[in-house]
Each structure stands twice: as structure tokens, then as C-alpha cells.
Length: 128
Image 1 (cartoon, helix red, strand yellow):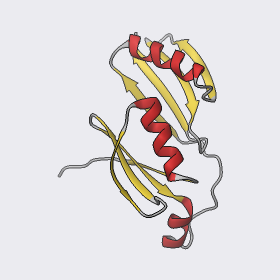
Image 2 (cartoon, helix red, strand yellow):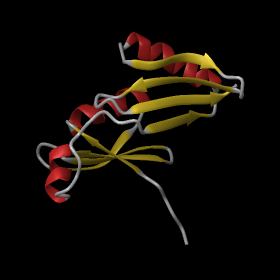
Image 3 (cartoon, rainbow, N blue to C red):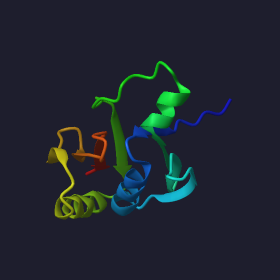
């Protein structure tokens, strides 16, 4: 049996989220649907994220909960410490909202955390 786990983020505006992930993390849009766009699949190497419009999800799943800030955490792990140091500087310059500043942990990782346009928590990490 083969299993792939793909994060699907329910967002307020798919186009805004596409721009955020393309501009900040070099994702490319593989597929998209709707006018305006209500669903998209983005890819960066082997990493895949799906984005779906909240109102679309709500209409498809009648008991879908109200959209609130969540406590789920998506982790983007990079191979090179240099990559996240450069990314940290770029995100700071782009005025991206941080929930955790750059830190070097006692378990050998460098990490920082940002919020996407829908306040999804993204932890960015690399081995030191």
C-alpha cells in the first residue's frame, strides 16, 4: 500500500494564497479550477499543497466548521541552513507576519515561524 499526505488549506482567497506561496517559497501552480479560482494545487520539488476556497468547502461539506484561526502547524524543512537564513531575511523585508523569530534550538535545528494570509502557522526549519 502506498500513501501520500497532501496538506489542503482552506483559505479565504485562493489567488492571494497562490501568490503568497509562489512568491515566498517558490511553489508553482500545477492545477487550478474556477473563475475566480476556487481550488489550486501547488508544487515545490516533491512538496505539494492544495488550496481550496472556504465557501466552496462549506457548500460541499454541510457541517464544515466556521473558519477560525487554527493551531495546526505546517513544517517546511530545508536541507541547507543557508537557505533558511536567506529566506528569513527576505520574509522580514517583505513584512511577512512572524509568530516565532529565528532561533537555534538545543536539538540541532534552526527555526522560525510565519503566518500565511489565512493565519496558518508555518514553521521553517533546517538542521544546523
